[in-house]
Image 1 (tube, rainbow, N blue to C red):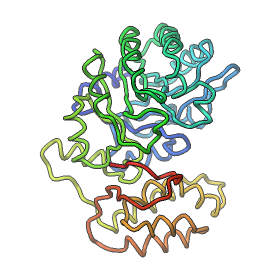
Image 2 (image 1 turned 90 degrees about the vertical axis):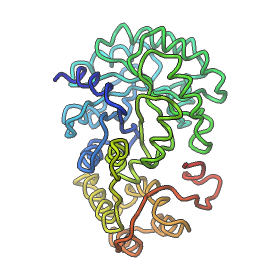
Image 3 (image 1 turned 60 degrees about the horizontal axis):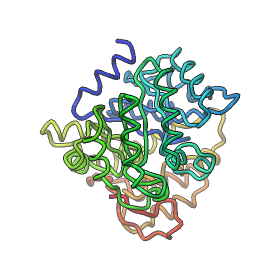
Length: 348
């Protein structure tokens, strides 16, 4: 089945699940790992940075050309230069992509200060122009991932008619503003507004950390499905658990040894061949930041992992906490963190 048709067929499932794009995290090796643990129905690439004189990043493009998951791959773009976005969309359609996605939600200051990603939400008219040009250029499904505003969710009421007018095929809504980052609770009521206002399917995004939470979000929003990022890094079985739960089955519950094996799989799978040991340990801390808040409630595991420098030290700490057969729900604990900590904020 052609990728675009597979994408449309996937959206008929209830619910449709997607792995959220997270830059320098959800790359091709991580896709491969997620697929082994049950995986979602859709995979979104890290974003292609599109500006004048762009070249599609080859490592990201490889996620499409060497997609190991057997599931549709959606190519996400970020940028604001319309001719370049159009040219990139046309080039991407020469590859086996299932859909083209525009990022209107990235909250990183380095992105939004250049009026890209979430920064575009300050300019609805500009969003309108970009969507008009891309809708004409994209002959396969065209989708958008957005937040509910830059610093004021009131703009969401202006954005919804724009999304509707340009007949996008899917909208993913992360229910926070750009300024809120990941620190506030998720405003699921705004996702429900999108579901009510748009004829296209809507995916709910933000703080889905368990099968029970997934069912709650689907009920509260009426969304077609869910996009999950940090929760899936912490719990690679999450997509499988959601499917089991909604089918009336008892979801699989990992024990400590299962989690320890996942961490070993993660370490080996995402390791570039030429990367030095100590450099790879530092790279792993991107993943462990999200994983650690589901391991134990005191913050000690997170504190110690952040200070290891070798793989022996890393797995010595992991074994201390995970060399057991007790159930591990992998739901986020409310750790006592400094306000500026990357993990500070609401996780439930």
